[in-house]
Amino acid sequence: KVRSPLEVYKFLPQTNCGECGFDTCMSFAAHIIDRSVKPENCPPLIRDAEKDAKIKKKLEQLQALTSPEIAEVVIGVGDSAVKIGGEDVIHRHEMTYFNPTAFFYDVWDTMSEKDLEEKCRKVVEFRKFYVGKFLTLDGIAVRCTSNNPDTYKSVVEKVASYGKPMVLVALNPDCMRAALESVADKRPLIYAATESNWKEFLKLALEFNVPVAIRAKDLDTLKSLAVTFKEAGVKDIVLDPVTEPLGEGLKGTFERVVNLRRTAILGEDKDIAFPIMVTPISAWLIEGDEVEKAYWETVLGSMFIVKYADIMIFRSLEPYSVIPTVTLRFNIYTDPRTPVQVDPGLREINNPTPDSPVFITTNFALTYYTVESDLTSAGISCYLLVLNTEGLGVEVSVAGGQFTAGKVKELMEETKIAEKVNHKYLVIPGLAARLQGAIEDETGWTVKVGPMDSGRIKGWLETNWPP
Ligand code: SF4
Image (cartoon, rainbow, N blue to C red; front, side, top):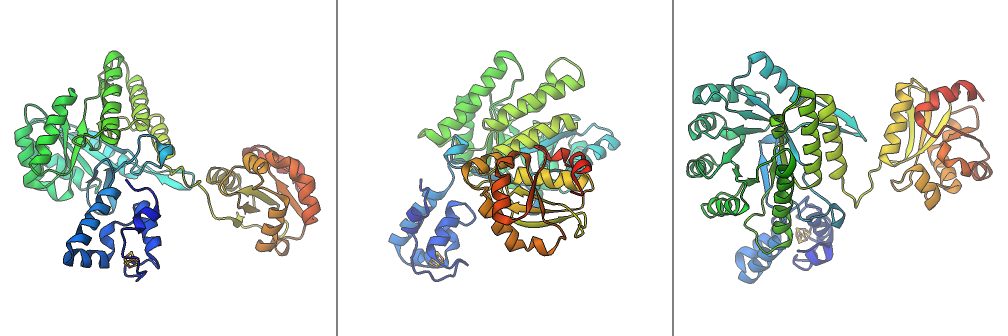
């Protein structure tokens, strides 16, 4: 596998012609590494490969060296389509994880129309603002409980109208066929081919050209089914090693999932190098009330977001279930090579006037959005200077030399803050208190030390502003 632009560059024409939309072959190579382009996006390379067998071989070599270890599977179509798999590493810190675990929420075909509509709407409308992004849910899993092809088909059609990717959950091939006849063009994942129905499911996957999940608890059986499907020409396969929610069953599930991913990435055996499905919904088999089941569903979800589920099916849409899992997923799937940061500069919050206070914070996204949202929601009119600390938080950047008096002075000059206010007071975070004197010396402004926690700024202003 190649991991650096220089290694990719060796395979490119090196003419810097710009046909790919990048100025240089090196820049194109860097984008192959970050997966925003593929080797086939270099037109001269493709043209040359058509004429010259040696170059064709080189292209194939580059494609093999840059394709992910785990196959990438797309579920759904258009803007809402979700990509799963496509991973290259066992541990996030070795590079990054690429495609966040996709979350699907279950409905079934014997649900009342009202409940079905309410649940689909909740999945579509869920949005949680977190560190500058909206966290959302990916799709809907439609379970066949009627065992009636017509009933299933009609409910699947209703769910399809919400425009989200779907997992069709039906072990009866007749029910699956009825649904696919209507919605195959939406590219649903069909779930699941098992030891008893695999022949019919193989036919369906090939006929309708849709991704298919294969389900077996025994890993040899799972592998042998995957090989059969692959050799028959099915490229988009998802593996479900069966989720058991408690005790030895849970231990076994964990071991099977880890084993699948480790063998696929570290081993020679690529027959199981496919995305993995885990079903936290199996927590609903545990005895207990709804809150307890939802709790265990969240525990299972969290465990397998970390190791190594690419797609999951949940039932609970309660905030206490969804918020922990979407937040954990966001954090696991951020790229550790790039600090999560915002643009430095000056922000105006709640229409400030020349009398308004001036605060300063860092450009670490989590710090910035916390401070900005605390100031906005408390109705504080102010200026907020955002210092480029290379994406580090206050305490770390003060200690590491990214938050310095000299840099504060530069930022104040660049943003011309002195021309916007009629005072010379700057409020620094409590965690940067030790820079108070240095910033005063450097800028000539009076520096006031604010609270440690931006949630307490409102109270702090009551006794400290106007100065
Ligand atoms: Fe280089 Fe190919 Fe891009 Fe031209 S199109 S600049 S040869 S990578």
